[in-house]
Structures are given as structure tokens and as C-alpha cells.
Image (cartoon, rainbow, N blue to C red; front, side):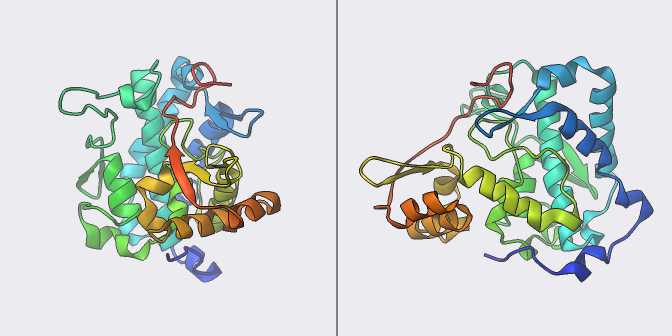
Length: 272
């Protein structure tokens, strides 16, 4: 898998005054409404944001402003940060529009979409392309599915498994929603921090009494991003695990199963 560590030069090629602080309002929202609980899980206070007309308007404006930009002309790191922030902000917006909900899967659930969720709805438009959350995550950032205007969005540049620690689906089982926006300058460090925070939390991996592992369903659904083997998944987990967990992973007897909690990552509804 290709890493986004392209060097300092790549991070400063695309410089525009209008772009420099474009993610500041998103950082302000995240720093206000994301709180880390005692277990290390980041929870977003959707009810509080929905009750704030000013901050709800700030979120809406941020998403509108992002859609006016041209990510195809950004550097790789700036574009990655752009898409990850847009995905996360749009997901929060969808939750706010439908709140209260117990799970993001309760949104848009119908006969034709029994799994539920807003992921296939074209809720965004960038560079004249109608986009869904799936287009952003799987088509643009992962490059594994069809996405509009692939050439312009340069999806082939990104084959980095850390994408799974960048996008958040508003669920307990998902890697943490960060407390600040992604930016080109700190992207690699932030992705690594997100990976470490998730891998070292029980919702990513637990070691059973028999030495086998229960892993997050992320590592099953998207195994191709982790080498497409259980050994590849374990190697990835070991890379970001703390020493005690890393030793257990190296001595493990393989992956026995997977689990995922679709409960909303809200302090009001989520589990404590």
C-alpha cells in the first residue's frame, strides 16, 4: 500500500490565501463537539450542535465552501485532507438533519435499501460531479470502486490503508472522529495517530482466551487494503499496536471472527 508521506515539498506547492484557512471552521466545530470518553472513544454531541443555530449554519457554510474548491488542482496531501474533511463534515450534517437516530443505518432505510444508511445518496457536488459518501470513500480515497471523473480526482495516487482512520461513519465501531480538521501539514502524523488510537482500543482487536483474534469488521470488509490476508491484517495491527498488544498479536493463532458496533457515536445515545 502506498503511503502519503510524499515529503515536505509536496505539502507547500499549492498555496492560496482562500484555501489556507478553509478548514478552520471545521476545526472549531470538532473542538467544540467532539469529546473523548474514559475509554478513549471520541463522541460527537449531535444534539448540542443541532440546538445551536449559529454552529449548524457554520457547518452548512463550510460544506458549501468546500464544494466551491477544485481538489483536482491540489497537492496529494491537500486533496486527501479535503476529501476526508468533506466526508466527515457531510456525515455529521446528515446525522444532524435526521437526529435523533440510534444508528446511521436508520437513515434512508427502505425496501430497496434494507441495510440503510446515506452512503449512496448524491448529496454533494464537486467540480460539476454529483457525489455520494461512497464515491468519496471508496471511489476517490480508496480507488476501489467507480467514482465520477476519476482522472481529475487522481484516485490512483492513493493506496493507503490509513484512509480507514480518516473517515468516520458516526458509529461506535468506527475509528475516532478527530478533534481537529485534517491539513496537509500534519496529515501523516494525524493519520498515524488515528491508527494508533483505534488499533489499541478493544473495538479494533481483542485477543481471545484461545489466542485467536476478534477484529473490527473493517479489517474483513476491506481486507484488500491490508494485504488481502489475515496475516496482512495482523501485520498492520502490529505496526500500530503498543508493545504489550503487539507481542500478543505476534503470538496469536490467527483471526477467528469480526465485530462492529453501529450505534451512533453520541454521548446521549451511545454506550458509556
